[in-house]
Length: 257
Image (tube, rainbow, N blue to C red; front, top):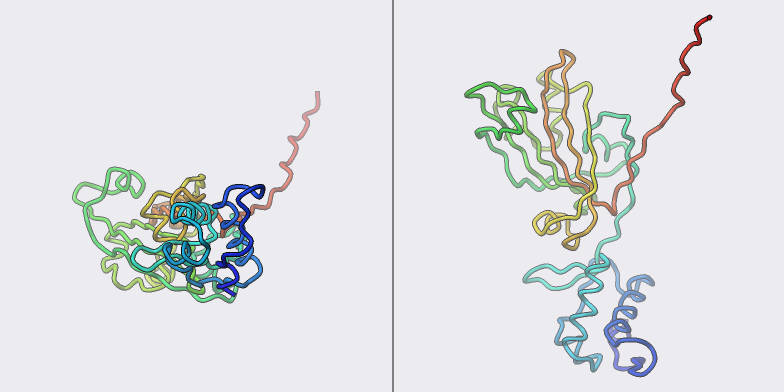
């Protein structure tokens, strides 16, 4: 099947458009029909050039276009692979839940790739968001959240070290740990904005640089009104739809003249 995709036959240098585009379409069709399955590796650039009779410049241009479309991913030192199929997830904005709880409701497993768990001095933004005082320290938790092996989000949470003295106790759900300490947030203010992903975040989420993403900033509050959580997350734009239920605002009562 791969031999058919990368065969010499079928390229038209006259009227079927640029050769790189013809190769791009051929590979895209193989992906769409399942001849190239998610996770399958493409031959190295020089092998594709040899198999198709095209120049390496033409092959490189076709692969770059497929990467930009999110159909294949390139991993340094490993090669080029068909991108995994990502199921679109709908997330209700009216519920205050953790990523772990979200996936559990859908019957999906959760994995965390930990990037950092540390206690450090807070940034000015963290001091303001968490209401920290002079000399207070902050716990920073940074991890990639995966479901079924697919990276979906990068979470960067900050909390007062008084709320979480030992960050290593967080293995799966931060909210479960906070609940065990009587510190689970009961309400939150959340802001969502669109973003094009930079090189580091794109690499962590296994998407092309510049791919569409969603930046979500959440400030979580205890029943007392004290801030307990300041989390800045990045979600894959191709994996999430955020939904909110709207109701008609009550009409103001008319007063008698």
